Amino acid sequence: MPVSGSSPTDRLSDGFVPSQMPPAAPDGGPILEPATTDPIPVAPISVCELGPCRRYHRLASKIDAQEPLDGSRVHLPVFITRTCYPTSGIEFHLDQPIKECSLWDPLNKADIQEIADNRASFARAHADQMDAFNKSWEDDDARR
Image (cartoon, rainbow, N blue to C red; front, side, top):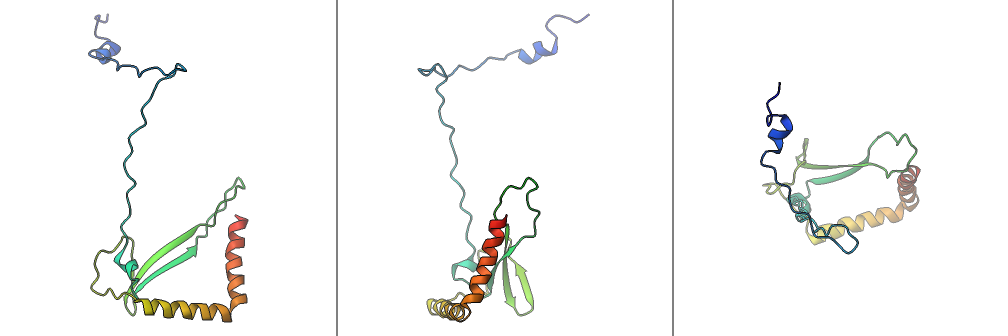
């Protein structure tokens, strides 16, 4: 025969004091204060991207992923690979931002302009092929 005052609910409720109800709004509902939020953390940029470094490569490639079974449309999944080539034949995947690098060799404005000019010249010479390439990515994205 159980002894009074020793049931599980009695032991759990012992010392329990409910909190005060929030004040009532004109419509009868509670007036609630918005929850405090922490600022969104900013991911640190890698020193490789600051210059950018001549050894830093950012590759965007399509992920071979299953399309949704329900037929819904999703954007083309793209995988970004960040890699450093410190010397020929050596490849280093950059999974985390790099703070310091003894081999950091950033491009200057003249280098960046030369690369942009070379890309623009190539794009002009191969405009049809570049348009077809870009359209193939857009079509694949639209298909999903």
